[in-house]
Length: 122
Length: 236
Image 1 (cartoon, rainbow over the protein chains, first blue to last red):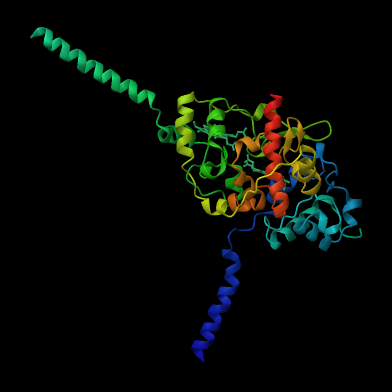
Image 2: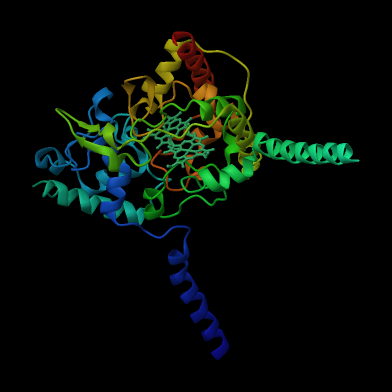
């Protein structure tokens, strides 16, 4: 009984620790935004990224509270993870599932809410 | 006797001189790599696994050069380097605000050191030995075929959105990735296929996303970049 409980404890501890030892540690949302998003959305999130000039569909201005408040957090999570096509938007917005963990994507959604200083519906 | 001694001495001096000249002539690729290249290029691996390491990279990783480049391209490029990454190693470090968009601050980009022909050849043969990713290359099969430039551009731009980050001619296309109008001449076809299929397998933190390109489109992209590099060559 005691050994069983000890084993169970070890298994639980292992399960809790496992995500921490995943291949890469989570980076901060600000650092991820700067590295991956700003190439199109701009270093200040205003849609003026260095790649935007020749893009047939212009990157979203993340400081635009009106446009950003029309999106739910779930929709933002989905478009970051699965790309523009997943929400019937442009192929130019890539799927980032192989770059970020879900945890990092949740962090980015929060970061977007700071950039627009807005929430869904307001 | 005196004459003989003199002759002997001359022979010895000639021999020493010859050996000095010989050493200078046969450039040691490995030595050059260590002394003149490793300060900017990672030639041992592994690739960065944190953003901090990614940002501090001073040159592209060369530790899998033998899996990636065409040797004839590399040798010529090392002798006469041209710009491949329009925004340098980490674009975010090299931008300024422009009229409408952020633009590259050209003052921040340095010229690449050039090697004489002999050193370029020696370094190339050394770099081509570096093949730690034969496993990834072995997964690719390149089917022979051709594609028109118009159809190719359609795939690269409209279907897969690659144009967002890559220039397909000087001054046209995105600039956060390397230009691709010479990629067909620069890169091995299987590398183009493998990197497009899974960029993170080569460079875990790269800002090129995995766009889950279909096998069919991967083949078309390989053919397109080949056609494009020939077109770029003709134009020059």
